[in-house]
Image (cartoon, rainbow, N blue to C red; front, side, top):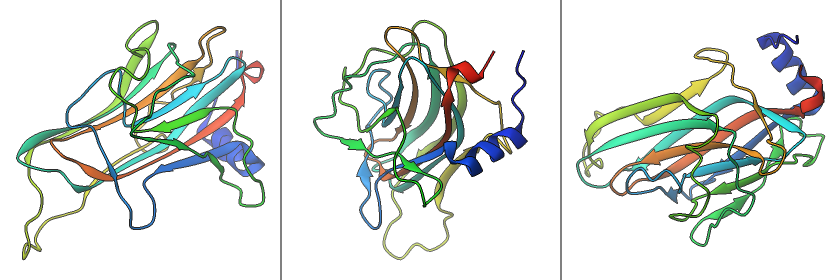
Length: 202
């Protein structure tokens, strides 16, 4: 049985098996879902058969949140995937290799801003939430306010765990979904992962 260690993840990233994707970039934030919707994640990775991903880091930064409302940030691993995510109002994202001397190479399909009912609900098959954050009754910072911390929520396999392996299911693939719900949220999502052939695992 293979035992994956944090040192192995670091080594794989150094060897060119690490990837990152951004939803929102530079000074242009994106719009998040107004409320949690299981089949409309704000960030979605479809993992094809024969490929396994291991999430390494997730960062969700809110630039605005709208009116007073509870914020919910969730990361979900699932054996249920959907290659044809509908993103009419979103973006098909580009996975970048963490080594700048290597272009592309990811076999996954990454989407931001999935439409309502835009994917098969990932809360099916083998699935679990491995990260959840929340902040109650948060409103947008008003002009003149300067006493608030950034609304930044972060998860790292190196600091928080657990180590999550998502092998692509044989027919439909598997998935990683990230939700960033607030009443009228805008901001940025950055996800990093290691991607290896499933055959390297036992």
